Image 1: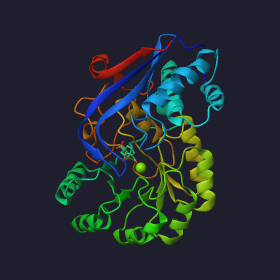
Image 2: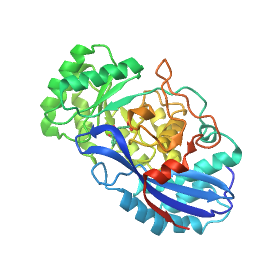
Image 3: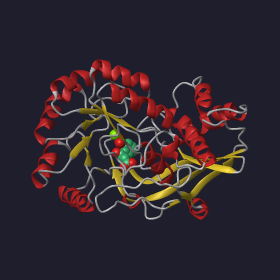
Image 4: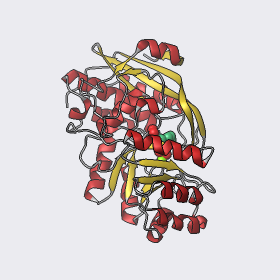
Length: 372
Ligand code: OSB
Ligand code: MG
């Protein structure tokens, strides 16, 4: 890959956009997407990244505030001191900081956007992907009533989403899945527990096998890899890990122990596109299926997720839905739209291939700082 001469400026924004509907999981109820954005300029080329953190530490320990701290007080210092460097060298220097993958990912993402624009190619080409239509998937939050849930599923089916994920939690699981399955016997269905269970709930978890689910995502503790292996031995339903997998080492541990058959790769959670690609390559060799998750990203983060899915090995539909599933007005053009077969086209322009709209950023911003 080419070298970057030096970075000229870095700006941070926090924007707050209302969601079209409340998004409820076992760990929180979200009404807005509050996103930390980074804009890096280098030789008049402007790259954008979106941090996948949220204001609260309920999904993981990172928040917009911790990411802001790590970016401003550490990552940008490292970056500003580098001359004629590759993005791999940046990541190498970031290793000194333990954890904080989401903060690292947003810096890496903005640099990749710059790099792809410098070459005049779309990001997927830069990371070694091949253009293809990407499969879609929708994540449906916990609903107020079963009727609301069935209606949401019907709408998703009408749109031709390739698979439907339902958020579940203790007490809002078996009975609900039973009703969903009898109303929709043939849809590709999965459930995401966001760590709400323990092995003591084994009896409930084993009943998931009745519903022909593609997988159960992150049933146990957000940090656990070992107990998931014990659980997987007792379930026919494949376990998919999300929260527990923060890097390649976690991936190898899970593969060795047999903790899961599938991994939800969120590039932001694992430290960016390059780390995601490494994890993906390892999974491909070790018979672990992968798909690309999401964190209610705006059009910036959504574009990175789309480019990622052009890599071989993303064999399952991810959590990439239409822009309108979350936002009335997004901060980029063009919005993500499902094709008539439910697939999504990856942007073909240089870099991430979407236009960041300054007027929208201005309107939704709650914080702005010029870092350098
Ligand atoms: O667990 O995958 C998750 C959203 C926020 C935090 C965690 C998760 C999710 C989703 C929605 O399931 C994914 C998306 O549509 O972006
Ligand atoms: Mg999940």
